[in-house]
Image (cartoon, rainbow, N blue to C red; front, side, top):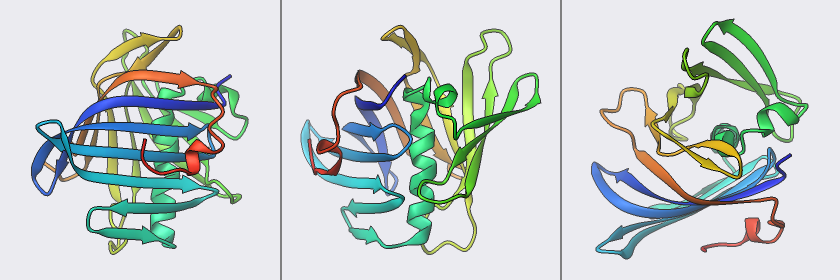
Length: 207
């Protein structure tokens, strides 16, 4: 049973058409809240910093070009982000009674997840490798920008696997918006700490 996770890693982050080597830390109160801290770097020095969180069903993004909060589309996107990143808390998809699975075919299933703080639900289409049984990708319709009129297909891709704490975890993983020529994030996991007390840390900023 996983109650929390602190995921530390490195990534190639594409911003405005330029790819930056980056370091990041994702902190999860499992199935409830998350916080992201990301540093895009140049020659190892921080160039751009991102502080964002999704807590109690509300999202707040501190981005290089401004802060976004009190926006229903950002909240909706944050909820899918919470559950998509739970690929690094994999037992949560079995132990959380709010989560349901529906078979589509031999290698595809629908993952139904709660919308935090409401009675509503959202879903992913999840694909598995026919030989290994390991997840290959997850996808959902998600708000890309708060100004958009329609949701965009959001694709999480497992490009490799590592073993940590007796579990197989995705690393590296890629995140792509449908229509883009390349992923905006390709992340590798350096370390994961499970079941730490993150009650204060998840509301902080920075490392």
